[in-house]
Amino acid sequence: MKTVLMVAEKPSLAQSIAKILSRGNMSSHKGLNGACSVHKYTGTFAGQPVHFKMTSVCGHVMTLDFLGKYNKWDKVDPAELFSQAPTEKKEANPKLNMVKFLQVEGRGCDYVVLWLDCDKEGENICFEVLDAVLPVMNNAHNGEKTVFRARFSSITDTDICNAMTRLSEPDHNEALSVDARQELDLRIGCAFTRFQTKYFQGKYGDLDSSLISFGPCQTPTLGFCVERHDKIQSFKPETYWVLQAKVHTDKEESLLLDWDRVRVFDWEIAQMFLNMTKLEKEAWVEATS
Image (tube, rainbow, N blue to C red; front, side, top):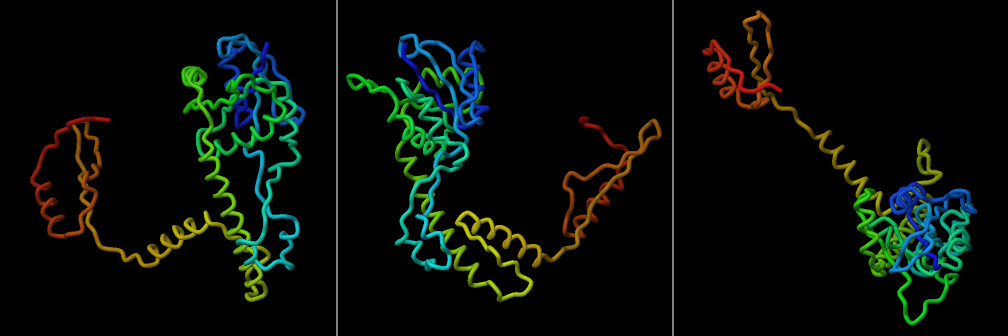
């Protein structure tokens, strides 16, 4: 029988999907990296009986970094990091041996179904997995399709089963957009982090300038903080009036009623409502919560 390798983004997700698709009839064991389990069961795929192997990664398999010599702060001008410094892909967590783990599990498989998260990052991880497993999988015959992408929005029996019957293809353009974003983050973040850290070192005695990091995602967040701080500093309180009514029930209990309008900033309007309220001798309860 042929074998289908299925890969999810997290170990817990892989276990949940395998339980649903196998209806609980599966065997499990830890993979060689000790972090990811492998769940096995039999079923049908593309109209034929197959062995299924469900496993996972732990987020991104690879990460982007500069070549070794460009990681030396004192020997590289930060400006070089924008264009001249070449980059390379490295394992995101070498201790997990994720590439080797995927190759061991993918060796001899005939199909791969990618259950990565349905966002751009997940799409990028799809191709990281494919880079590892495609070289060790069995060769396709007569142009047979071997790579499939599952798309799902929740971990329910219905959604997972529907995703399995409506498999599509991974989107290479979305994956490339993440590659571009990673390179921008790396070049901009490293260049400005090194520049401003070296610039501020020793300038202010009470400043911890051992590392002053910079990142494109930090800039808008800092902007939100500064904007909120400025609003707080420039805030000018205004006088307002609140109307409260204290009513007594037949049981001689008292209730303090809050005004649905909450407050008004015009004293004359507040006084008008107060005078109207004073004239009333009874209150009618329209609804209770």
